[in-house]
Length: 154
Image (cartoon, rainbow, N blue to C red):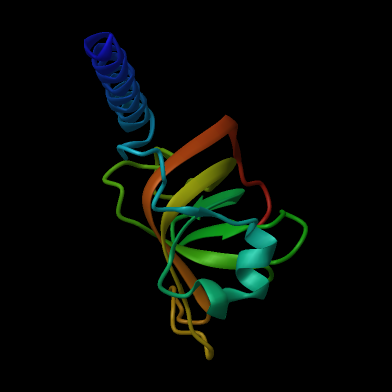
């Protein structure tokens, strides 16, 4: 009878181990992390910009309107404001174009989810010209919908 209890205990422990390995493998396939914890913190763009000092040096994912012009790459809360209002400079290090603009004079925008390292400093240290207080160095991204031609100048 003791042998039966030991075998049952061994089977239960084995099933738990197999289950944890499968769980880890599935999460690794989805997120690149064995236990499913993403290195990125999900943050709304408006909160990221308002409380930039809290996220400085952190890996974040956020969504907004990604705008690319010949002299500009930014992520904005909305298209209602100018280029400097409620926006962060984008440093794309993903190795891929977020938007393919085609010609050098083309300007486009699209709704996008960008993930990467966030920096925040006072006094406008980022961008061309150096007037943005925030910068997101993009490591991965996802776009939603079709990109649109930017008809007006930001």
